[in-house]
Amino acid sequence: MTDTQTHQRQGAPRARSTPALAALVALALSACSAPGPGQAPGAPFDPYEATNRATHEFNKDLDRKVIRPISHGYSKAVPDDIETAISRFATNISIPRAVVNNILQGNMRGATEDSYRFIVNSTVGLAGLFDPATELGMPKATGADFGQTLHVWGVREGAYVEIPVLGPSTERDFAGIVVDIFTDPLGYVIAAPQKYYVVATKVPKRMTERTRFTETIDSVLYGSADSYAQSRSLYLQKRHFELGESGSNTYLDPYDTTYGASSEDPADVPNAQ
Image 1 (tube, rainbow, N blue to C red):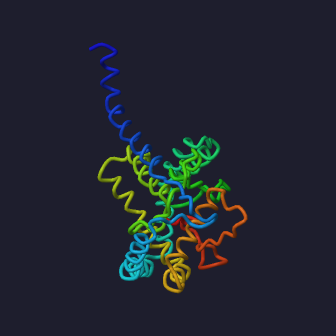
Image 2 (cartoon, rainbow, N blue to C red):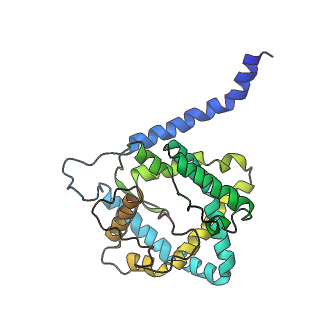
Image 3 (cartoon, rainbow, N blue to C red):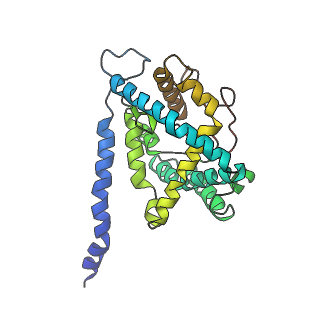
């Protein structure tokens, strides 16, 4: 077999996967529509409001009947230390994805800092169950995602959308969620079925967050006159703040200690997705 044939056979799997990823990126770029000519300045771009409101009611009903009671039951049954360790582990395994996105954004400092944090917590911190990186004064994980990467690349935010189960988002961020699934390095390093067990740890982390911020979340979903408009406003303010687009608007983070419940450890304030 010639060197050329060997090279072609070794490169074949990559050639098959590259078009798929390129198609996902193209879909992300094309999915983000621009506000119409009648859109008021500063108003949310929400052309799918009727559908979004129906999805919001579904999500509220799901939270009331399933997510909220299971989350409270989980937090009562699991000791706080174990709950925190699981959340730290879930946060740690999300760092390689952030490293990839920092590189795509040209943020090499963020990629380097995230890499160091992942290495320290994955070794000394026993796969992330402990957080020695914070004790050593290392910067917090950037939490970079592909939605943020698209923003850096100049892709429009698009319309506001509410996704079943996942909740508030935008066309750009939803496209980012899809692409992040395929660009997570751990998904290619860890073999099945172990990688599915790793991904599953994100579920108890979300349950922990639901319980620890229950007063704030309940006040938004069940205590406001229009929970849909309130959720939309808070999500967009939060996301714009994360992307450095807050401008003169006051940012009200529903997970902040000044607004809601305690923001103790696990994961140090989650992304609302």
